[in-house]
Image (tube, rainbow, N blue to C red):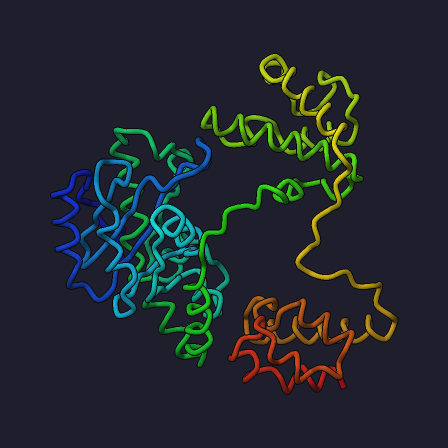
Length: 376
């Protein structure tokens, strides 16, 4: 297949949106993509919505004076398939910005992982399944999609991101069906549709900073104060948090509150000049506050496994790796690691474990006998 010509309709006014909705209303499937500005602004927002229907591409500008809610009915209709690549990012953004809860989702990235393929990136799938070689311009990938007007090159890039989705989806579906894994993919897509945007908890998000696990209670209190400062500045400046103060610098200061800021790696002279006094106040406030306890993790603490438990887990891992090689699939898809760890500790609870929400129906149907047999 030759590389397809890119054309599009730019939609940035109410009439254009009405015309677009009318044009796509009779479609049974749509290719969809979004572009956001997380590399340039904070908090991020969806800046483009690209939709292809019957080879006609609409690039919708949600930053214009239009009611994007007009897309809700189409997005939430289960009988209209919406094809994405790497849908989780798009689904969260659409839910965050407009409350959309999409149904009828097909994700080519998800499908590809069950199709015996070696490469899962969108450009790679286009090349491997359809033939065209699509050059991914990293400069355009990193564009500030909130800028207006967008260049013609940026708009063509955005349109190209959706025109191959239908063809890639069909090629993957054919392979999946031949392998007898259609029900597997269907269940994964059902789970994908449940994705919702969850805002970070302001009381615990600071512990997500890399390296924070090494901090004691006092260090966590300082880190929390510095985190709050960074959040306030990022929103005031409309800049990503990493551009305000790096995570590395946050942890370095929280680890050694008395450190000379000039000695903190990743804290440039301009940042010290602009925020030095505010950082000092945040450190002082953190030191004066009560030491913080680390919020409990999602997984409960478990003691070091016994030799017998470790041996069982090794056998379960070996089974999963061997099965993945046999099926040409990522072994992690076959059975959740946390479930294997629980089974290694308490194999007598196998039947109870099968009811865990982490276990898919297709996993139970295909692999429970093998997992039970591996446990002995």
